[in-house]
Image: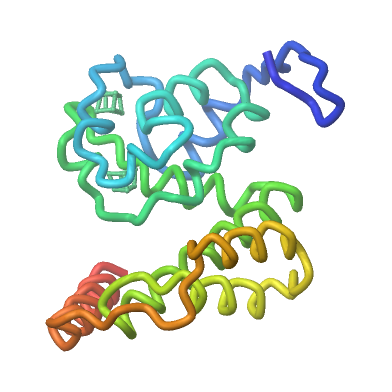
Length: 192
Ligand code: SF4
Ligand code: SF4
């Protein structure tokens, strides 16, 4: 069942053509998945996903695009290719996630855009200071999404309770942290 905006539950609509279409577009043998779950054990971001990689593949096999596109997992894949290397059937979720991102509707893209803005804001502060700076992250996130006045009450509440610190502590090893980011960028460029 799928929960709608008005909180009612509706049965998901099956599309029998969906698994074949995603399989062809991604060039991945989606139908061969037998749910061994190795991909999910490997995936470095599985803990953050609402649907783990093997569950995503299962929903594609079942022909349930609404469930698949409603999942934030398709936007969280970092393209490490670990699932493909561990899968006995050579199914690379990264290729599937790429196709799902390209075929997603506007609502799904809007959610993803906010998610990515948050991730970028988080990483930018870690890169700069060596650890997350809550206030820096919030400012970056709001500037990049234009949601300047949203959640003001919550922000004030957190600030008054010392949860949003104006000046975060500096950490040692900031140069090493920046080097880690540079190395990750180089590896990403090499893979693309
Ligand atoms: S590792 Fe491959 S076969 Fe196993 S659940 Fe994941 S996609 Fe399916
Ligand atoms: S390619 Fe994506 S789905 Fe596969 S292990 Fe890496 S992050 Fe997870």
